[in-house]
Image 1 (cartoon, helix red, strand yellow):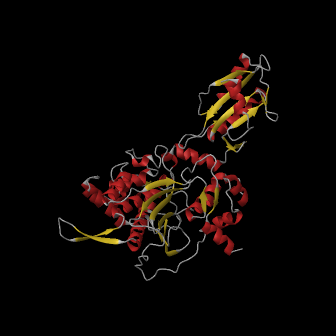
Image 2 (cartoon, rainbow, N blue to C red):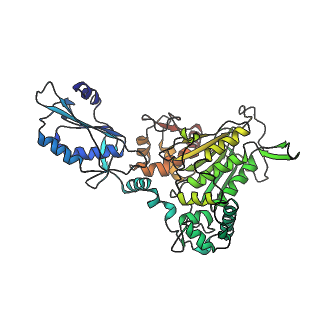
Image 3 (cartoon, rainbow, N blue to C red):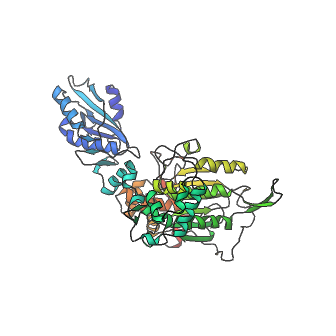
Length: 495
């Protein structure tokens, strides 16, 4: 590293990824910034710069200076291996600039602390990390130790579990050769204990999600379904909300597909009988919905799984993330399985609802290819994971045949409407141009990014209220957001 490199780094003043200190007399504050870099996007910590004037002055570096820097870096946990650059300052002979680069945080890594306290960056400011953000990162680092599914259920007893569903899973597991035949005659409580769905005889959250008929304490056990007119969310002809355990939601979702997707008939060669087939293969939709329910972040109790059917596509969305090892692109290639809810996934595997680990995306794509359809696309918008199927035969909004109405209960078309008071507040606070995340947070009076993303940002994206400047790169460093036309129209109607 040269003095010219230093000049280039400091050319635009301090930022989210650059911290400048006059000397190592500010070493403690510098380590706070270093910890913040490690917990955010990474960055450079440079000593020997006058922050206001951005003048390179350097400082004298002795063995004592190097020892103090080493001792300070040792205060970071987990330990980091940092190369310290000592750069001569030609204008001040004998002085050196001290520069250190810290890599940013990656989902799944343990959050860093400095002498036991975690820090993170908000733009160019170093702050103590909020407790809920730190807890979320600890859970991501040790998911099974802190997993929502592993906690005992609130207000749910063993007698509240649906015996029919449990026995059905056991029977399928035996028939599929995944559990021994002796499970058919064993007490149900023993089988659930082996599946680690009970703690001291009390159902866990995983057992409640899968089998409980008592869901009063679980508002997230819902599936929102809508059939929209056209290719956006301005109008719909059917809007439903299902509640219940995993199997109730799976049944409701599949029924909604059969209600609103076209059925076609085909005479099979082997039986000379007519087979009814959905326009998008049943197996692909069912697999995608099972994965959506299995792998969502159920601890986010204010968010809801969704099915949206448009004229041109079908979207299945769940509040969640991709595992650190998988991206929306790599999910299409062979990969290992990294289930977010391990106990739920293991139970569904043993009962044959899930097939071999890590093969779900492949089976979905294979089903589509066999039907002559395009492969679906996966994406993550920062709050929800989406899988999108293109509907065959779609040309344009003006060339579409009438909607396939199969129910006499279809509703009259309705204008866009936000799903929550928080989304309404966000829409009303935004102008017509693109805005940064910080500007949006300021508009609703929030400073905590995690809370804003969960209660405002993610629901607004799911509602179709806001759109991204760089939709194909959700994490673009210059990402901004603006209201959709539907949200703008809604906003004008209530003023």
